[in-house]
Amino acid sequence: MAIETLTGLNKVAILLICLGEEGASRIFDELTDDEVRQVTRVMATIEHIPIDLKEKVFASYYEAQNIFKGIFVKGEDFAKRVISATPGEQRSNFLMDQFLSATESKSLETISLMAPLMVAGLLEQEHPQTIALVLSTQHVEHACEILTHLPEDMRADVTYRISKIEKVSPEVIGRIEDALSREIGLVTGKSHKKVGGIDAVVGILNHMKNNLDGDILEEMEETDPEMAEEIRKKMFTFENLIALDGRSLQMILREVNNDSLTMALKTASEKMKAKIFANMSARAADMIKDDLDTMGPVRLSEVELMQQSIVKIALKLEEEGKLVLGSGGADELV
Image (cartoon, rainbow, N blue to C red):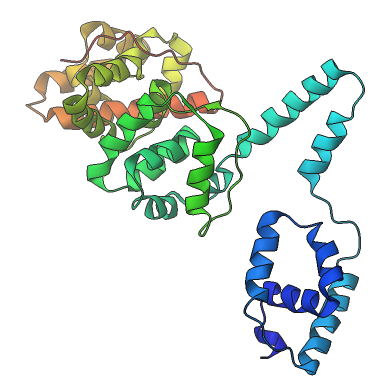
């Protein structure tokens, strides 16, 4: 057995055995139950420690001791103990609530840093309810990208399950994190937190590309028509643009070419068309009106796809803080 092939756990196990029972026991007092469990499992496999290996392990320990000089501390536990010892029960409780609310947001934070395709590959073998819970903890754009990369036959089911989630206990999140911990490191939340729900689904679907939001809602309609309709009413649609002020609408139109706008207006209401034309040059408006009059039959899916692309421009501008959008309450397109 060469020192180069030893893992950190192997070195710790050898070091503790060489320290003897009393020394190892005192060190165990400073370790967590999980750390003790891992080390003792390795200890149980050791029957002989060659003298040269023992010397190399100790030399490695002294070298590490010099490299990592300083104080090692479990910061979160230390902070909790300090807060608990703060004079004044009311202030102590307030500070603890603030601390916990700040740390609980770390739940499943590693997934938020991973590429959506990688996360989808990791999750696609999990139960749809597990996937729904994980996506519910993520930012809507990241959740949207992950959902897009999931198998097509799973998307509607996962989306529907997200819409039914309201709160999740730390025990449930803990079980999910344990199941995924071999691939990624995760941090358990400390209190019930609100995740999922219809608003989360609306945010995810509003960021979908290639009309996937429509496909998902159509499939969901077969399972729960009322839920699908409620989500549709809350989603920001092309017709919702009619409620914007002129400056905001002009900002959006500057990002859209005339051909795309013409296609998007094919099924728009007369009121919507009038609002659009009033916020562009008379020449451009006349050209689009002429194109609409001469346009032949087109697929409804193509029109909806173009409308959604314009909605996404509006959502992007809102995220950049350049305008404020409303949602819901629009007439359905016909």
